Image 1 (cartoon, rainbow, N blue to C red):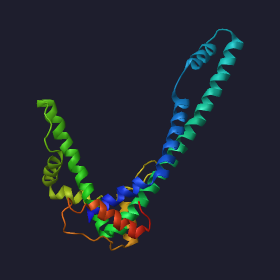
Image 2 (image 1 turned 180 degrees about the horizontal axis):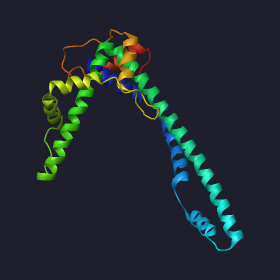
Image 3 (image 1 turned 90 degrees about the vertical axis):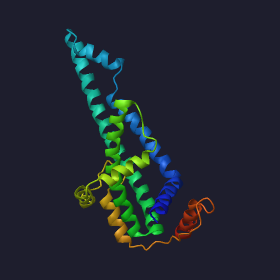
Image 4 (image 1 turned 135 degrees about the vertical axis):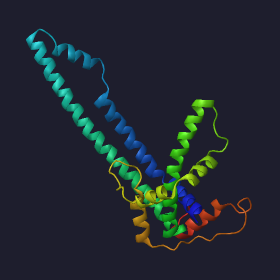
Length: 227
């Protein structure tokens, strides 16, 4: 159920073409604001020379120009922050929509179990990355099976540490400038939905009956639209 729900989540994101295009446009405009706010060019050098001139009227003109440029850049920084916030808000709404399909397909309990499992695996991945970096420095060798390495580190997590990770799972709130909702926010929405799940698992091997087809069929049945 967890894997099928995750696949459904990603399929919904693939279908959000308009949202991705709008997000791309927002970020491109934000990039222009950032360039205007932080990049320096020959005009900045010329204004600095004017402001440092020994000629009084020339120096005053340079200082006025520097003040105007500073105010303009301050406004651009403000627009950049607003644009970044809007872009993150849009991406979070896309994630909420994808989460709703995952919840409908796999069920609220399965969604929460997936969030909890991923939270633990992220900690195991951080630990595995440290071992990987140390091994590369010593012998310039990489593991043959990265997922297996992560699972080994997952098995090594002490029970007390595992309990601490699970207890602090929903503490962090969803920030304004983040692209994904927090784990606590996602689990709260799943509990509010209280979905039992609409997926039917088949015993047929994936090579014969691909799970992607099964998930797409279930999402079409739940959402009333083909992804």
